[in-house]
Length: 144
Image 1 (cartoon, rainbow, N blue to C red):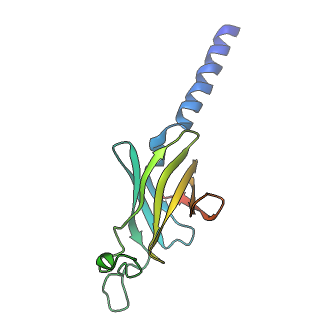
Image 2: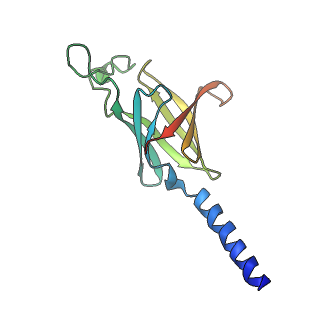
């Protein structure tokens, strides 16, 4: 009887550990802290990406779509913000961490190195230049 209890406990611990290490748990929609935008995270091959899938205010006052007019690449300034790929090339690195990717900030047109850490329905986004200590973090919430 005790052996069965230990076996059940071992299986329960292993299943929790396995689910905590599921890299695809990051897939889905995430909303930024201001509530102005949602990012759809998806997978291409073994890498993770995210596009701006929803905006609270997608259009200008005249009804035209908001454009990526802050982009440092002039050729991209005429594209609509909605649908832009903001997250690129993330690789799962264990411990619910996604690294070696970058994040594009459409508010200033700059791209930063980035690390993401998944904790249940919270996604910590850390954008930085050079080393992760020199950066800014946000917590995105999963959209249900």
